[in-house]
Length: 359
Image 1 (cartoon, rainbow, N blue to C red):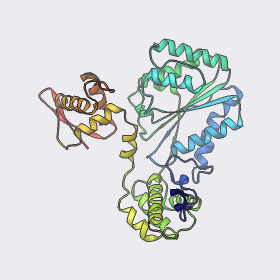
Image 2 (cartoon, rainbow, N blue to C red; image 1 turned 90 degrees about the vertical axis):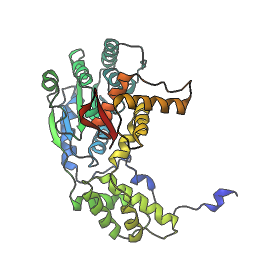
Image 3 (cartoon, rainbow, N blue to C red; image 1 turned 180 degrees about the vertical axis):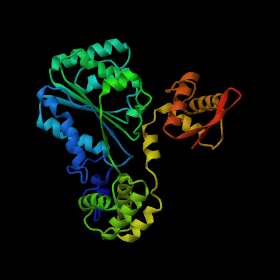
Image 4 (spheres, rainbow, N blue to C red; image 1 turned 60 degrees about the vertical axis):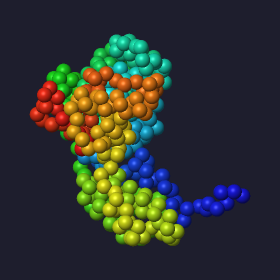
């Protein structure tokens, strides 16, 4: 019988997956108006007409990404004349990376390296001409994107008859304030603000997830969980983490259902989720930089570069699988970590450099 004979079905969880931050429910409570507006904006693509480019903004963890993924899924069911492509700009920040990924999402082969920017634009243009279908691209966390990449995507419509629509998502309402005038004028966007959930709305959302996740639970845990999530800027992911951790604790304790005691215990440990999510999205060199700064010291850029190289050498040896980047590239990574709020830099320079430390 072995080890599996000692493992029974969970007494607590009916479906643990619904508490994942990646799970997209079929119904998204309290976002009906936003869903309808986004749908109206992209619907013309199904008739071969130009879509209304849309900018979605609001605090983290309030359903922006879930809504657009839900709308895209429904739109492709509604019309076989439109291809919906979702891209997170954390993973594809540069013009070549972004356009290459769009081509790949459209089912065409393209080398990730060795092609020039113009060659990639030409390949995307050829792909769209062959498909003769509309395209809508969502650029999530667009604040991470090099704005020249957005301009390249906007230009594609000049070369093809295929209508191309763009949906942009950011926590930052003013992300385009410093963009070049040619980008702002070409974008022609409509703004849709996602406001934080109220306490009642948060309870509704978490109640629905709990019903699908647990066999049984004390209803008071939903109130406690919603209170905590609302205090943390209305981030639903905070509430989901609380439910998940409380459920796992109840299971470990052999309880029959999720009780108030478990929820009170985990709430103390569940704080902001943004930093953890950001760290998961960093590239290897950015992670090594955070490790270099983890001792709490303040470094000049030169000192930090030396410390980074030491870690690469110690971790990967002389023939490392990760090659150290140049001093200049490292500065770009430092600036990015500073932009997303994971590190801090002094305003005044020490010599020719600013001091850098972990936040």
